[in-house]
Image 1 (cartoon, one colour):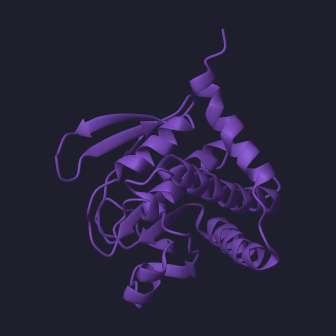
Image 2: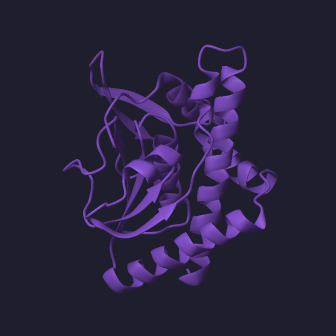
Length: 212
């Protein structure tokens, strides 16, 4: 019997990549990120990515987790995804719900009313990913790294990221605008699809350039 939850991540990832339209300006940014990932990975044989947003509760967490999945999907090794904020808050429940709906499994590692820590996994992943809200230079994040800011506030409030070997700005609309609204589920799902599709685009290009 097919476990639909375990197979739905792959279906969601591929469907988002096939259905989300990416315009030429956005493609240019994604290609620049892919080029630099391939270049640094080729030189270093190991690479860290750090997705940065103001509160590390929504967009940067979406990006980190989809990059975590993409690394496995495209059979890449020694590339690691992290995330952080200019301040710590909590991994927002609506973000978790959207990711669970696309097939990821979340298990509480350390309970906290303010900022619980989760272990995220999917079928076939070698090591679960620990996620929680933290600042971008938290010691648990791998150093050095390519920094990818995902919201306007992060780009404006982080003019200098000392451990970044490169920095890119890849903004997404904040799904926070739909919190406690009738369209909450729809908006978070759309954000989840958009981010997963763009992460797919980046890592597909990295995979192509590495001739894997």
